Each structure stands twice: as structure tokens, then as C-alpha cells.
Image (cartoon, rainbow, N blue to C red):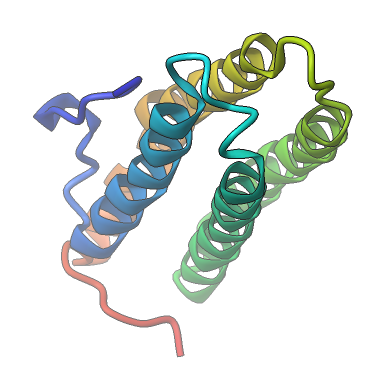
Length: 147
């Protein structure tokens, strides 16, 4: 595994924490299938897993944005810009992934995956923390749906 969840990653909003765990689990699965010099044998699976991780990332970012809009978070525009900037990076990750050659795909895969995880961890531990106090003031700790 490339990432091990611990309580320091919790924002203590159940749905968001559950989504973060699932998000990182998808990346761990991708990483595990890229390990051990077997990327060539797993390229079809890796592409599908990478596409799933990207799709889930977009789902999660939209979910957060709906939640922040619903509760009229005053820092919404700034947080949305962080998401928008990351989605531009996702396009870069996708392009890099699609250019993986069959000589040493593991190197590029690990670089893409590590970059992805670094951003996710930073976002969870820093950017997401910015809205947590606001949402808790609104009484939110176990939100289930944005409608």
C-alpha cells in the first residue's frame, strides 16, 4: 500500500471521511497493481482502475462543492478554485498515464500515483480543514446526502 489511513486524516464529518477513505483505497489498489514489475500484464486493469479513481475524484469534489454551497460556506469560491486547479492537474495525470510506454511503465505509474496521493493528502489535511469548523458550527457531523 502507498497510503495508510489514520485518524489524523479525519475531518469528523462521516460522509466526507468515508469518501476520503474510499478515494484513497482506489489509489492504493491502483498502486498495488502497478507494483512488482507487472504493470505490462495489468495495463487493461490499471487503465480501468485509474479511470475509476479519476471518476471518483470528480464525484467527491462535486459532492464537497454541493455541501459547501448548501451551507453557504463563505470560502466556497476559494475552495472551488482549488478543486478546479486540481482537475486541470487530473487532465495532466490522464495524459501522462495514456503516454505510458511499454518499456518501464512502473516508473511513470508510480510518479503519477505518488503525485495524486500527495495532492489528496495535502487537500484533506489542509484545504478541507478550512471548512470543517464552519460546517460544525452549522451542526454538521454526519451528513448523508446533498440531494
